[in-house]
Image 1 (tube, rainbow, N blue to C red):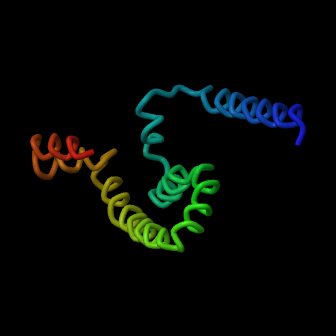
Image 2 (image 1 turned 45 degrees about the vertical axis):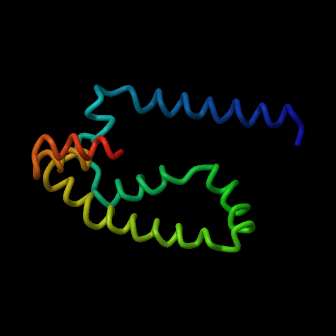
Length: 124
């Protein structure tokens, strides 16, 4: 692959990012809109977005090598991800939407009080 082609692909990618950001920023938006989408997205769409955001290019580049070196012991981590995503998508996200929350910390504060919220934040 020639250097000009690589630079062209990178430039096209950044241009696409700029166009998308310009198109999506034309409305009246603020931080609340960014983090909650004005509560207009269904919880299952947010769950798929969360899973997609947690996967990155690094995952697709580095994990096959790790699997080859560790003789598939990484598969246990993948199984844990599946269980964790299922719990988040099927239990926590519907709860967040029902209680109008943004994070687990808001739930901790609402359910158990201020010090529970602070303790949970420390463990992050």
